Image 1 (cartoon, rainbow, N blue to C red):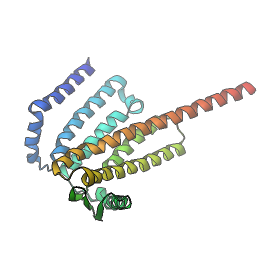
Image 2: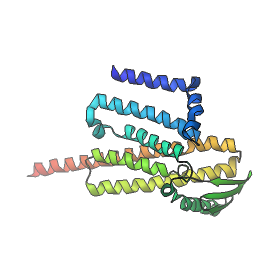
Image 3: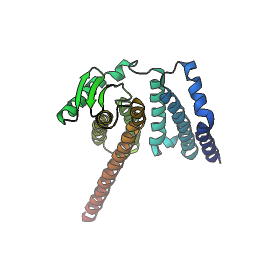
Image 4: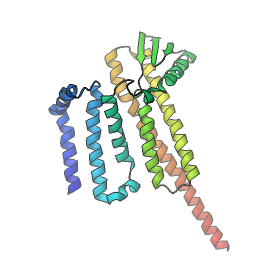
Length: 252
């Protein structure tokens, strides 16, 4: 009954967004010195979803939910935190998170030039692009570069590995491989934004529409597939170990 009530409250919240609540959230954003409205409104979406997940898991499993099903709650909580940082400390306010961005931007400019997709030059976190639709200056900050996805990946992966019966060395291997893969997804993320400008449109409104969904569309499938692959590999490994153990017991 409690879970049904939580679900009903969550549905009411999501429905209310379309009938005035989102506009209200936008209207009060200046009171809190929020500059990035999208991050502000999405932050509340993820806060509500995080509360729903954590409360539901706690009702169903108690404190054991941390080991049973941590991915969803941790992802939503982590994303809410990242969005709050982006809303209250926008652009390059958080210097450490911005540190790696120039390197990603330079690498992206190199890829565009090497693949002859257009003209691309990089300076710090700004990329000057010129393609089929004219010039465009793309300024990249840490959320757009996907730095937050590495943080979220780390939280989800650590929780995932915590409940897996895997030797420590294999856990470390999977974690590092996932970080490398997530960085690769981030490179593709910036590359796709650049490609949109070079080949599709330099209209700012069109670009913002694409930019607002491109990151999560790439990161979430990658995270899901990677966790699925790790689960599959380890399940097969454990089955083989069990079969080997049974055969050894028979031969004794």
